[in-house]
View 1 (cartoon, rainbow, N blue to C red):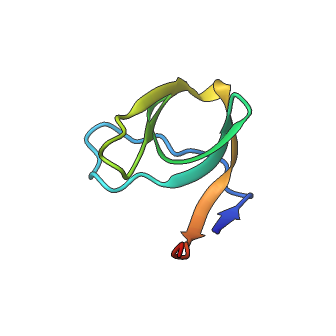
View 2 (tube, rainbow, N blue to C red):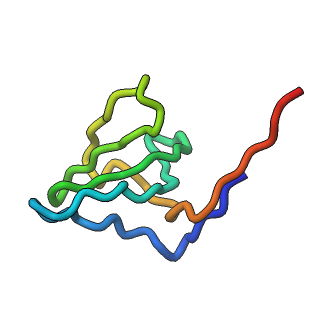
Length: 81
């Protein structure tokens, strides 16, 4: 289950030399597929898609190829038995 704020669709640009904080998490459509990732925007036009799972390397995309649904505010899960 995920709580998404659909009013927050703007990905902030990270300024060079700014303090390193964790990138915000966004829900988005990528070629019609719904995804949730941390998104870092080091410069205009380009974004880096980051996974909390270290087994998945960062991916790069042009911002215009993504359709941002909104910022993830909360997530939870249940155990499968």
